[in-house]
Image (cartoon, rainbow, N blue to C red; front, top):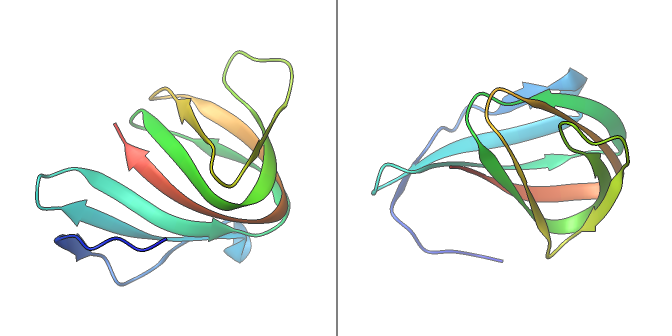
Length: 103
C-alpha cells in the first residue's frame, strides 16, 4: 500500500519494547496525526493518550481491548479502535505492519 500525501515525517524512529515495535510519526497538512510502523512477534501492552484506530496492513495478531477478558484475532486488512487514556494487550504472531490513526 502506498499513499501520496503532503505530510511532515519525523525521521527519527520511535523505538519501543527493546526494538520489538518501531514507528515513524507523521503530521498531515490538515493537522491530523498518524504513525506508521512494524511490530515483531511478541506479546506487549500498549497505553494510549488519545483515542486511536489501528489499521493493520499485513501480519497477524490477537488483541485484548480495554475492559475485555477475551482475545480477538486480527490480520492485515482489518482494524480496531482503542479509547484514549487506556491500555490494550497485543500478541503478534506474524510481523505486523500498521498505520495508527490518532482520532
